[in-house]
Image 1: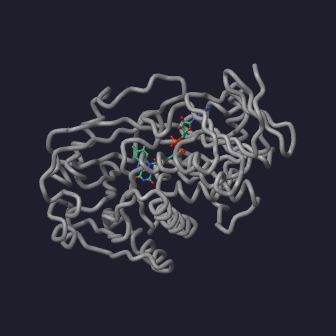
Image 2: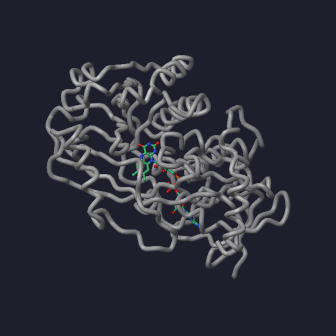
Length: 392
Ligand SMILES: Cc1cc2nc3c(=O)[nH]c(=O)nc-3n(C[C@H](O)[C@H](O)[C@H](O)COP(=O)(O)OP(=O)(O)OC[C@H]3O[C@@H](n4cnc5c(N)ncnc54)[C@H](O)[C@@H]3O)c2cc1C
């Protein structure tokens, strides 16, 4: 086993969060090594099957709204630096049964941050977007400045800029272990080598469980499926917004038909648990992969319930409360943990990367990250560390 040169920071997992962090760190002159098991962007984790929704009137409270607004600014900056179109402001329509009662508070909070959001009744929704068939018992919130991000292109763009800024990237390399020998000395092991750094950032997405013996991050991976369906002109880009839809039969999200790719729909709740090391079944392996999506199409978007053009299976990495985990390791302040993005993290990746760079270099941030602390799971964390028995 060799011993390589040392770095200021090693990032384990160069996906959505890790690649962005790599860019922000390298840009600030930090000697950064990114290590990824695959060759990002890739189709094994959480960022493939673009696009991803970006919304700002967030239900999780002010910390998320601030983070979303900062992320939006940084996505625009990424577009300016690369000359690529990464963020499309299609508008996003959120629909729920009126009995849900959550929209008024969300709109009120959003207004405090200058985020435009409009409340609509079911008749108004159906009038504006004839492709939507929600019953009168539903209502909606429309965010005109929201939209979607081309997630794979975003990861590719950060990769290019990170490397241009001097970061190094090792692809096809699985990190097997991390050891810390002091406040500013860490060893990151792969099958072939050991790499040395002052700081480590773990952004292992759906694979956190594999690093459990070192990093007690309570993340559970779920297999999720999305499909693209032949749809009428009323669902085309420009005519139809991105959407989320809460129903008694499931929670869904989706996108207009972009350039003939089909109307994309995914189910947010449910999903089968997946553990690192297990086979990962492709789209279509289970009847519900398409049936769940088709059920929602037929009920709520009947003109988009055409032939399936494509399907994809992807991984959610769930924290117990579905809020993010961005914190330092409980015993090692020079190790940062960023995970548990629970199926809604991509939109924030630009800002999370910047935040990880700030926490590494400055040891502080202006953002309010208290709600992302690992401490909130202290009991669960302790329990899962014990049950892992040190093997991961
Ligand atoms: C179907 C689907 C739809 C989604 N829709 C939305 C949406 O509309 N809006 C939104 O904001 N979010 C959405 N999300 C969630 C969002 O995509 C994720 O929260 C985000 O991509 C998570 O980023 P990550 O960096 O944690 O994971 P990833 O991007 O998967 O990166 C993790 C990386 O770590 C690497 N890795 C892991 N372990 C190791 C190791 N030991 N050694 C080396 N490398 C390692 C992996 O190879 C991978 O590249 C969706 C997710 C899915 C699956």
